[in-house]
Every structure is written in C-alpha cells, then in structure tokens.
Length: 413
Image (cartoon, rainbow, N blue to C red; front, side, top):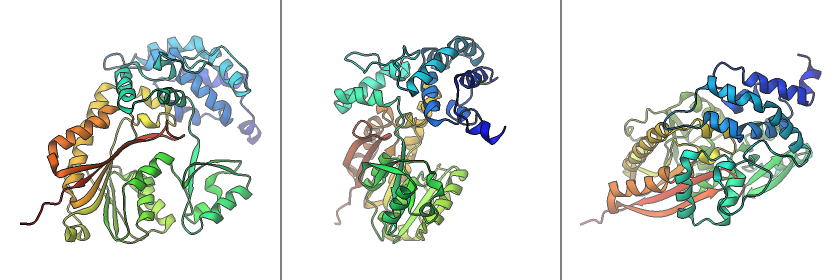
C-alpha cells in the first residue's frame, strides 16, 4: 500500500471493509490489538469511536460475555455481529463530528440516571453483584455514575517529566506543538502532533509514560533513600522507576517478575533513566527467594510492594475488550495467586517495615476481601496504615486499589 493510502483518513467505505474483515476472522481476536494492526485504521479519533461502538454494542456483549463459565462460541457470535456493521460505522462517523445519533450501542447518548443499568456502560452482567458491593464499600452516589460513564472514554496519554531535566523536557514537548493538562501533581495528560518517543528528553530518561493512579500508588509505598526495597511484580517497570526516584539512587531496589519479556523492557527503562541501584531478577513466584545481603542485614526488606496480577478491571478504559476475556474461573485463579504473593511479601519484610498491596482492579474480591483474608492469616502482627481506591472517579486515570501494613515489632524481653 502506498504512503498516501496509509495516511488517508478513514472513510465510511473503509470502516465497512475493516468491520467486515473482523467478522471473517476464524478465531476471536483481541479487539484492541486487532484494530491497531489494520492498515486502514490510522485515524486515531475515528478509530476510538469505532472501538467504542463495537465494544459496547449489545450484539458484541451478547456474543462474548460469559454465560456460566464460558462465552458464546465465536462461530455463532459472528452471525450475531454481521447485521450490526453498518450501524457501528454510522455511529462512529456521527460521533466523530459531533452529530447526535441513535447509538447502536448500549452506551447511548444520554447521561446516566438513577437506577440506570450498569451493563449499558460496558459492565459484564456477571459482575453486577461486585459492582453493587463496590458502590456500597466506597459509599458512592454521584461518583458511581461518574465511574461508569468514564469507562467509555480512555484517560489519554499520561506522562511524567522527571529528574533534574524535567522543566527542559516539558519545554521541548511544548515547542513541538504539544499540550499538557495536569492530572495529578507530577503527572500530565499529553496531547500533540509528535510522539513522546521522538523527544530527545525521552532518550535521556527525562520523560516517563505512566498512568497517574500507578504513579500515586508507587509514591504511597514509602520507599526512602538507603533502604532495601523489593518490587515483587515489577512488570515493565513503571512503579520501579518511581521507587528508584524516591530512593534517589541510594539503597538497593530489587525488581522481580515471572515474565522475562517484561523484565527485558524493564532493564531498558532502567538503563535509559540511569538508575544504578536497581537489581533486575527473574523469580518464579512459588516461594520466598533467598534474601539479598542488604535485606539479610536488616532482618528483611524495609519495603515490599506487591502489585499483584489481577483482573485489570481498573484498566478497562485503556483495554476495553479485556472485560470480555475475564471469566469466573480466571478470576478465582488470580485471587489464589494474590494471596500467595501477599504471603511471600510478608515473610520477606523486616519487623517495622511496610508491605504495600496494589491491584489495578476495582473488584472487592481482589481488594477488600483479600485484605481481610490476609489479616486473618497474620493476626495482629500487621497494622493497617492506608486503604484506598486511586484514580477514577477521583481523577481521570485508571482505577487502582492500595492497602499498606506495618509489620509489628516484637518487644524485647
């Protein structure tokens, strides 16, 4: 395909081509990834509308949402989806130019009202009970409506301009036509014609891409210079980079994960930022690893951060079709893993140290329920210091949960 063809805005005919291709797929694709790979889908704003039209349509939900323990088969689902292609395309084009339209989706053009059906906003029906528990536990009224309505719009690109070159990095972004809006102190929503990756400041490690809720969670972990810190599920290193900053390069920060490909990305991130106190190591997650010397001398780690594998329900704004890949069996397996990782983190923590449990989930089963089960296991040895939801609906970001405990120091006899 020529360059001119690739840069051309998506037209209605192209929309129909892409959507028809979708329902010809022999197997159910991961929708976000699949759309991003289509040559025609280069118009970002229109693509967002197409994605929402498909993801929140009643036909798509009926096809993919679990019934019991399994969703409808893809072959049968394709037959349900075909009649809706033209409606999705029409909605997407109308929404992009701001025209009122009879939406083919359950999203609808009207704001949420009292007693409205949460599934209209993309909540899987089998999680309705969890949603009601969340509303009750958090004491939500208007906040609940804001949360659900926020699920149909992504929070945008969040960046941090960090280190001694932060001001210079921000100025470079603005000189290239970029705009920023502060989401949370230290985190900005960035918009503009340039890619963040093209900035010289990015190459020097003065710019980080990180959701605001993730940044706040890492800050609340309380890492300090000179400490021994274990980032248990470090992933690609978003929180690791914040912990390293909080430690000012002093002390020792262990970053572990079971996924080696994520650790490869983490190593690149650490190298770009220039942190010398980060130790990256693969770990199988099955038992407490041998404590490094710095932790042994203290009787354990000063800080342990368990950013546990979870449903990722708090990130559905950025990965919308993930809600339809979750089912009760997967959720139960994740809960078991969360409990195991919490116990490992607790055993590696020194008396007087802080254990921070984080999920990118709003489901009480993965959050408040895990907190209570953990405290029942360890008894009064754990003193709860902080428990809260971060991000949406308080501010425009992912939604995350955090709980932190201090390990009781046994009195000397």
